[in-house]
Image (cartoon, rainbow over all chains, first blue to last red):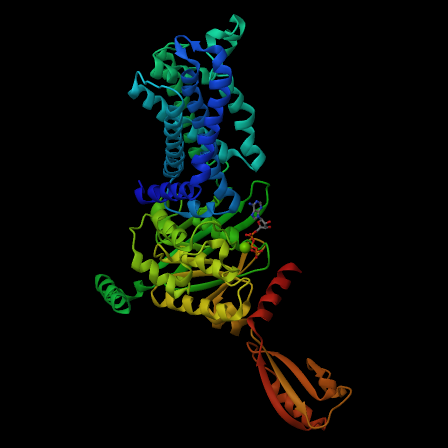
Length: 253
Length: 332
Ligand SMILES: Nc1ncnc2c1ncn2[C@@H]1O[C@H](COP(=O)(O)OP(=O)(O)OP(=O)(O)O)[C@@H](O)[C@H]1O
Ligand SMILES: [Mg+2]
């Protein structure tokens, strides 16, 4: 393993992140605050409680998930697409590194960034609502796994994309709807039975449910199903990355 | 630096014992390399080339000849369709780590991250090649390339020539044994080009093998030991610069006349003569490698035609003429 190379890629990506620290942190903090104002105060004053949890607190896990999923994808896909776009990829291709080391460098950095972001949102949320975390270790595990798996997905999208439209296509057309319909802002039990069944085909439901369980001890689906889902999703992404590594798909002409 | 080098080479020679001939060891070995791009375009049609350690070789060829493709395939940016490449004895595919560790690449396009500082981007390259951090070494190359003052500047704030030097600094950051320079002096002013040649000369002195592509023939003439001509994916020839000049060398004999003439006398029609400067001088082109240059008989025939000579000059044709001839020959 070329550890120095992995470190170089990781540090380089993190430097880029800190260079744009304001955008990286201020904008999610502001948008989270807005969500609390709109959903927590305006709507929450009518809903009051979901399964014994105040609505403001209830939406926190979903909000964090929403942010880290979209940010992990955005960071990782851009991280690898950018060198392809400006041509600096030549350096990665001609360096004594293998694809796995490149993946660890880029995905590791993207996952770190989104993890930071998740923690920042969690702290921001703490200013608006009373939060208690029932299972902190499970909470961290869900958060880390989500950051890693969605960064892997983002990396694959970045490799696949041939232009900026494609780069935005998957997040916009698939991920955002799935996340919004994944129970970020409501409990599945609040839906009519038909839609409850449909929702169970949305993988994001399992992630949000498990994550919410680690906060409040209540879940839409059994927590082990959630763990299985996130584990399975990570495995699928890893397999896809492995396949790309083996075939050199869209990397070397 | 110089001292360390001498010691290193001495020790190496001793381990080689008396086999001094082995000093010329092969650094790059390409065997029947073919490359067909996805669209079906055959960019390399079986290139074989062998380059010694410490040699400087210039690849000349028109646009689209396959120079960049050749370099990209050696460096791992594109895959080959068939054939074999060895760098320092390591196969570039099976032993890619060992092979690529030896290689520094200065690409043709200026591919740099615009927001990065000069220092960071150069350090990044070193890290990518798995080399331990060495600030003193990085400083020395930045100074050598006159970039030290700009080390904190972002790449987008640099001029084109500076950016190209940043690319060179990146390629040198990990102390390569083989350096590929893909048109290093394209769009670079005359002074900087001379600087670049000096850098190449210094690198050669420290034992680095250099492969460069260029459209400037005088560049190849000035710095290369051997010259390869590539066209349409084929290596037409690779030869010692001097031998190439001699082999294809055409010389011109310029004869200035005391009194100008308007027409060539019939007695001289057999010679390849042209009238220039309004008849004030005659130019005779001849082949240096021919058995007889025909100069002696020409001169006596001139005298018998009653022409009085004022002065004589000879000119060797440049590599450029040779190159143009070769490519034309190929096309016809
Ligand atoms: N990625 C690619 N896909 C398809 N064809 C390509 C690709 N890259 C290069 N080619 C083709 O291969 C041929 C050789 O290109 P190459 O870049 O190697 O030429 P070159 O000798 O470096 O030319 P120049 O002097 O203009 O830099 C050209 O005809 C080019 O169109
Ligand atoms: Mg080229």
